[in-house]
Length: 339
Image (spheres, rainbow, N blue to C red):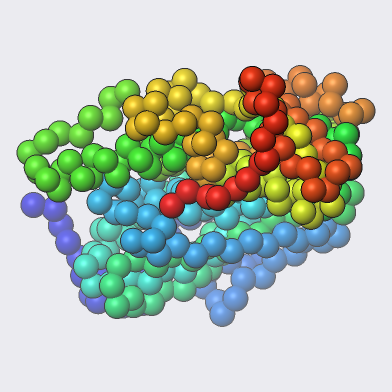
């Protein structure tokens, strides 16, 4: 039988001390982290970038198929992915958790083990947060800080007509991972003796449970001396993010179906669910890839990045946001989202 320690036996301060102890400082400009009323940070002459995420059990995650360590990693990724979208480097996070009495100390340890792994992978410091009681389920908030030089900062609003629209990675995998996990959950609820059938879905399941923020792309762009003209991360789906860039920049867009990167496993999973792989890629969300634009002059450099694909270009027709299909038919680009 697994050990179960009630959180009440530690108390709030005891729990905070337990959770904070394993975390080593990664950033030299973190002057004071956990242990006082607030953290002290010294960013010198750089701009500080901040982003916050709030996740609620039953709305944003399902613990029946989400391991707590994976959830811990994912919540950090969600916040720092927004830092990447500003062309910044992440530096610190603050984590707040609301816990119901069904969670033991050991369960919270699992969650924070994932948070610790993410902090090590992204080279960031956990500098604070809060713990409180929740009437039911788990609530997690995460605030991430990052830094960027004023000459390097990228927003959504500076794309120009003829800029090339580029994306990192591939799309639709997280949605198909979610669909696969939800189906296996329903099978289990109907018959608890059934074993999950996810052997051929390891890629899409991992895309859902443990996504990664694409700081490798940020570093490669910097090494090439390229500053994107606009950028966003794909939390709401590729189509939605392109429309966000268009709206903020006052441009139109033309993308090409044949260029949209979709992994083979995503394609097969979508077909199995009688869902268009293209629909999954455009509207699935939670892929946390980067969607960005670069000038024509910089595109020759960006082409050298192995995991970046050019999918279209910005236009000067604000009302024209379209996709050219493989059949050469032109359709309007819409973003209904996926529930």
